[in-house]
Image (tube, rainbow over all chains, first blue to last red):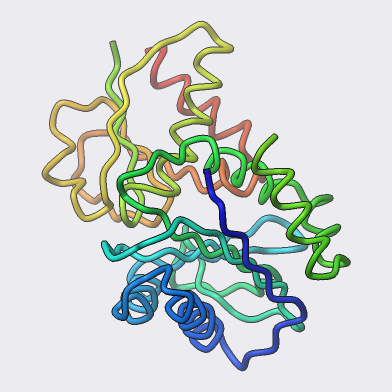
Length: 149
Length: 93
């Protein structure tokens, strides 16, 4: 189970590097991850980008290959304006991403269910559209509901 | 039984999502297969003995004898049915 759901509403950042570094820094402030997490996340995004073309509202699913995760969590950033991410299936191409889902997973835990629910959520354009019109609290409620279905 | 290697960047997150979707489709079609997950960079060492490789990230597979299917559609939903059909066809063979 993922206990921690962190939401950023109307987040403005210049580019994907700033988005990811901001989100990683917040996780570190809460001590959910170790100090090397931010660099690991950005390095990984460069090697294996996580932008996914899902239709109108595209998403990114960043996550780091990093051991010092103290708490499993999902951070969701609803971006003020879409930001370019490289595509997972074609790293040479960029696409405009509106919502970022950042996962931290403690390696000792099993998250099959959560991952499965999250993949259902990101392939559902109606739900993503709903997320874009939600406030912070509503996003958290909706995501918690979807992940625990 | 066919053996499928599912790979993503870290061998944990998106490969799990994709594996679960394929397993569900296999169940619905009354088929079975063995699954292994790995990192994209581990494919060359893990691939031998597998019948099919499924990836979420890009994998250049020149000179590779095992078929490779990109399954990002199983994450995005766009073209998911066609990808599942393709994978199921390999498993039925």
